Length: 211
Image 1 (spheres, helix red, strand yellow):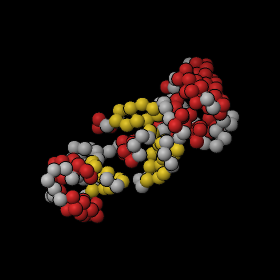
Image 2: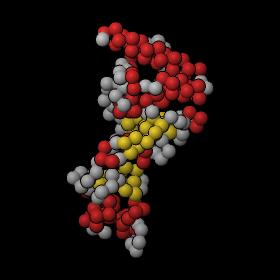
Image 3: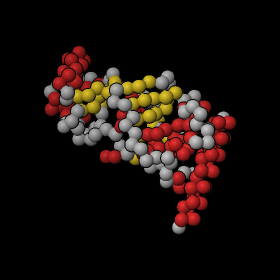
Image 4: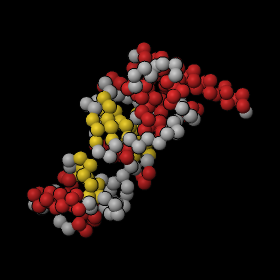
């Protein structure tokens, strides 16, 4: 297969699976050998075994990190600081893409980290629109906060929320936050939800006083 043929097949996709190139009347060994050459030459980047993306300048669509994270670990969703920054709830840029999975924790090249979450806590995520028509599964703002707190030791301490430097708190659905905490059935989650609710209402009162 020539590289021009590859561009015709996958040039409009953010990434592609090796299996796509093996369809039809082709020699699998030859295709895999050619793909390895393209990876070594820097034309193709291997995200994981069997999942690849075209390298610049051959990309028509630059894959969003959240989309890559979903593809690296099927059944995961982006959460914690990455989701909070996406929603504008924390001011910091997060170079790592943090996700949760029911599988074991892992790290991938490119700054993709996956933390384990028990199956009964695996809820509260949604399909969100990203750049260039891409979509990925991301925690809701409320679940991102709860996931982060769950994965952070001593996050139910009084000073924890202030350390996060939360902002745009009006974007939180406090009813949903409480419902998620109750669904988890964990005392720590209830304490965190109560603290977030108090913190949000306090921020609202201070804003109204200044208005």
